[in-house]
Image (tube, rainbow, N blue to C red; front, top):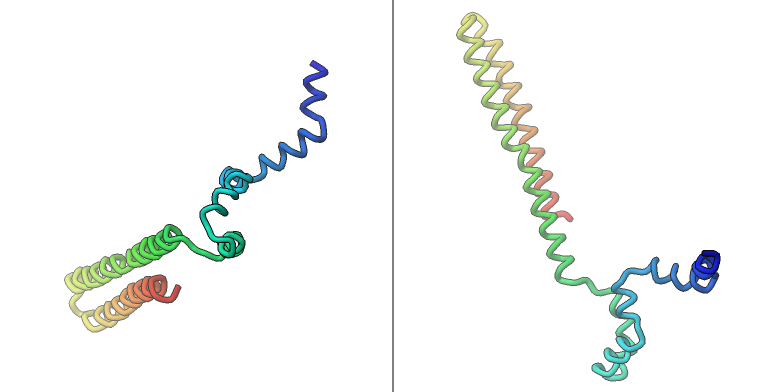
Length: 139
């Protein structure tokens, strides 16, 4: 038992093992010497030396597709507020009709409150639409 513990805790095993555990698998696979020689054999000498330098600055089509999908999902989520605006406008004018039916003498005051509620509800819908367009075209 003591021999096993001594082997596992030796400094050389911990140093080598910690390096392997801290790196992703893809880095370990592509940085092997045989993987580098295969890449270098396929490319001319000048391109093989520039392979490591240019790789870090390229973006893949997959990451651009993910960014585009995220924009569309965010814009769709932002337009949900437009439906809320429509529901708010319906509630405001429904309440106007109920209030007028209960007390017809307050017609002018109820109508002014209804127009104020309509304007505020419509403004919130337009803000949601503006945010959706900002997500789509400004980022």
